Image 1 (cartoon, one colour):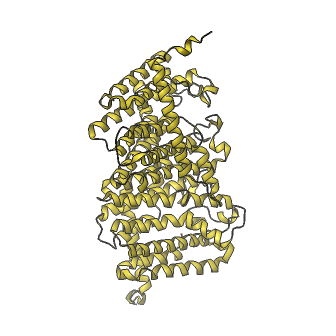
Image 2 (cartoon, rainbow over the protein chains, first blue to last red):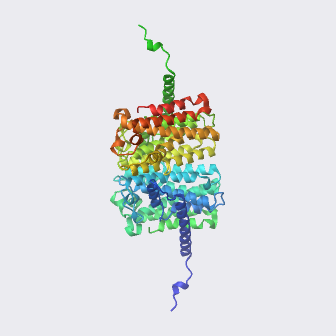
Image 3 (cartoon, rainbow over the protein chains, first blue to last red):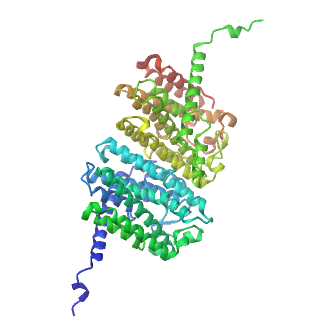
Length: 313
Length: 313
């Protein structure tokens, strides 16, 4: 008997999700290799903090932020080249990892699991986790500032500045503060949107924009990439809310149902699961549309916008 | 009766300590005003983290690091000008403040007092203190990267890179790790020197060197300023050990005798109080000598080297 399924040509949606999977996989491997190079093991008494930095960054994650830097940079023929793009990709993954390490601390979200493994303070200890997070932030800026990232100092200083803006008190950290202040209190849809935009949106938008800056995008191109980044960032967080409400702990590799337990105001709480899904899809549509000017070269970025709202983990 | 003391001319040592006091006071006030400008109050739910950042940075401290940036920059006629120098001075004070906020946390040194006031996590809470420290580090890099600090991007990127090197896992944070690993274990004189060089020395040397970079120093000048910074950094830490062993809590504005209680290996433990004092004085002498090429313009920096080893708080 012939297997009819195997002889059918795959649908265009299956093809693009296959192409995205391959692209995500190969870029994630390159980001991983770069992180391994940029945080080398050392000997001596300071080794412990380096080990914790490596533990917190290496070995996993979807590398969404790093992928965005590298995939957007590849739209252009910038002077950074692959080396520079992957350095910036590794840098934003360090920044992201620092925020997770500190977020998981007992005084913050008090989470024992991260990607199915003990969180950094459980694997090491609290003091080491605080220091490793601190040093990961520092290293993220250091890597951007080094000549190898881009030959032009004015390009490097621009991405340093954008990373700082995206991750400080007016960005990611501000969002974390709002998130903690909001626990147990009902937030409006506008407030939840503001919270998401700061807490996760800024760094995802930065990732896309850093790729555009490194690639030498013109103002129109950079504006569109930033808009794409903003929309998939928002879609990503809404999808995260939906996953928290619907997926199992095994699928997530972290504690599920936490938002509900913490009485956090989420898109799901405000719009329901279906309403939240529709909102995420609307954002993904808009994100795809704004990439029109880049033609087929931006197909993987469009696939990514779809993937972000359809993922199961 | 005439007051004979009043009619005597003050000694040269009294004159220079008076001149240094005035210089420290006026530069500390300018750093304070810059910090107030660079971390403005905001409204809304993220206000709490900003309030904690302001609490941790404003209102006190000797501003040794900020003073070094501004006083060294004033040796030169660099393009940064006073505005740029004080921005960089405020930046390094933010970086220093972040390290103190995290150092004081229960999981680290567990200190309730800082400059005679409740430490940041006691005044706010642990989560806010972690976030405020994180955001202070970010803001330190952001301020350096902004155009207002220096018109030339290649100068700005250079100080960003130097700050990252001085404060990351191969600098300050590495030193903190070694310090924690070393508690209750006997360290050799070499190990203690390495620990000090990383934990406090790197950031003090950076402060002097940042002033030189902003001022447009030539390589010989920059090398000498770095050497000065390294020596007064080491002298400062040795003097700190001596103070911890000899001063009262009231004089220090923080818990005294902590090193002894934590069985930390210090210069005092290894060399005795007099031996440690002599070592600090030797370093201060060398720091003064290396400034010869700058003539009288460097008098306050020489006074500072003396002050660092003679201070009582």
